Length: 82
Image 1 (cartoon, rainbow, N blue to C red):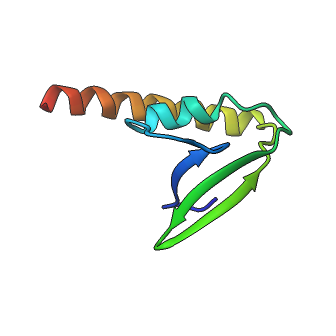
Image 2 (image 1 turned 90 degrees about the vertical axis):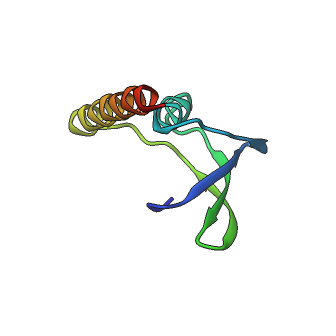
């Protein structure tokens, strides 16, 4: 996976994440070591990739929590504007 990849399906099931909160929480559902097939669009290329989630270090987990909090704050801000 690369920055800018668009996830179109996970395990053959189309996804329609409303925002980054749903992306972060949705991807957190997979177990460490579980192979997950994703259909992605990278630029104009359609690709099928297999990813295997790895355990996070404490620092990586803290960064994930920070990213989740930022995504939640952005979601709240966007909803206030609507």
